[in-house]
Length: 600
Image (cartoon, rainbow, N blue to C red):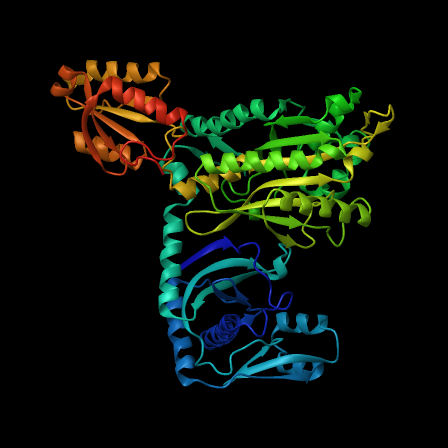
């Protein structure tokens, strides 16, 4: 159990805003557990004010206004009190009551009164077990004895209604599953996720840090910069093969550009804008308007298309401080971003090429479990005509089918300027992440007046596609660090091998070993510390360095190295020239495993 002042997690739905399905057994168990928790809190703190308590993924929570901060000891007491109610197995009964009766029942509970006033109709839902009363829509077990396996987990701060202008409440989280085995499995998986947390590994592996001096903006250390640039260099190699041209566009643009693109109206709150009205400047949060402006700088023929423009420039978005989270949610980031301008006849081929390129990149990185979602027109805040949206959605669906892939629908989740395909990957812990996207833009070509001269001699509007495969490089690095637990394949590892001299007299030969590997462009360090050999090996393993090359008298005499791998295998002495050649080959082939299974 833990107590902290961290803000509530994003994405969790408030009870009255998004009730769980009444027919879901696990959801009903979690919902009932939230009520049993509230009963326990009110008994321990008779003057407590209670707000809402919905079921959520993996458990439940309830928000309270309390006279003092809760401690881990409080959670232990509350959990024991909850188990008493479970053992008593009292009925949970619900009914509709008049609003006036509800106001009288909750007369000393301001958060309940506020909710009552907002509910439409003359009645509200009232649920009771034992002497505990709550305002609720329903979705409960029949009694308190049917709650499954649960434990109270932690406390976090949560603004009432998610609005930072309102009171800060204490949110008590609980975990709940149908069986003790499922609960324990979840706890173990979460502990493993904490061990893999990219923020912890970023410090431990000396990759990056984030400082309040620049909130949401990472400082990449030399090793982290090697990793970051390694990804960019790899994608750049593929750009040559797939016909992309890289550009660099400005960081600052006049507000008129953002008004033309539609971002000022639809994305302005997430931008950094400054200056006086009429001379506003915006720091770019994305590259697409700059690429459209570049396209407009000359006249294109159909023979020039498709035009594929790529850019790795830094982007900045005004994310709220409460949602910043390491590299997964940052204010400063870059993308493997590209925009494709093509004719309608070229559309399907371009989509196929993006699929092929995505498959190669994910495979080379060891990310093989990915699915596609088709996000369609939002209910509001979109540009273009509904008929154009439907046509673009149909084209994307047909292209996915033509590529022999399946997709899931994500209704209403398209970008404001067009529908999109989302590439979702599952990591080593079974968690699903959205990485790449392929989007059809229904607004910007017309807004910027983009055209090309077709074979008929007339000017036509090109089809515009937005494409990213890794997505935000910062977010991808966070996911990849956690997926690999920092054990990167050799070709991406910031330090690919460390040479470990057994004694000072072996330092000269260690330098020769390093030079031989560096000649093959391998990233090699020498551990010249005073530590014993086993301590040096342990340090290299903790830093996830793929290979440890130990050198002593015998190795120096034979021009060999004793090879250890980070997984623990001891491969014994091998000729230096052979090891250098094999490591270079492993790097160049982007193998996921190497000597002794040294990969991920």
